[in-house]
Length: 119
Image (cartoon, rainbow, N blue to C red; front, side, top):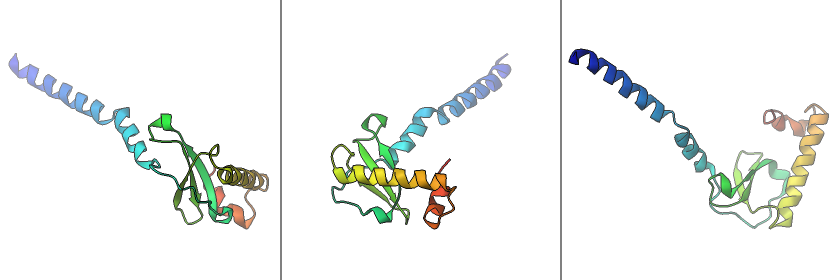
């Protein structure tokens, strides 16, 4: 009787270890590594920017921010658009560029890098 309990206990422990290993809490912890801890208030020139994304405090990051990605692949942290006018202008510029690139089906040279980023 004891010999049949040991394999069942082993299977149960393996299953529990697998569930804990694949838990969503661990996946969320990995996402927090990409947060901006500080921001720069220095204006970023539009011509070096490729795209942007917004970071929100409620998503596990310590502060709200806008993360601009440059053509060379660097991420630059900026304050939210509500705090700085130049951030809002850069966002509008990038949104307009993406819209125009989608309309031309990414045929223009300046749109080639954006084609791989869009879904």
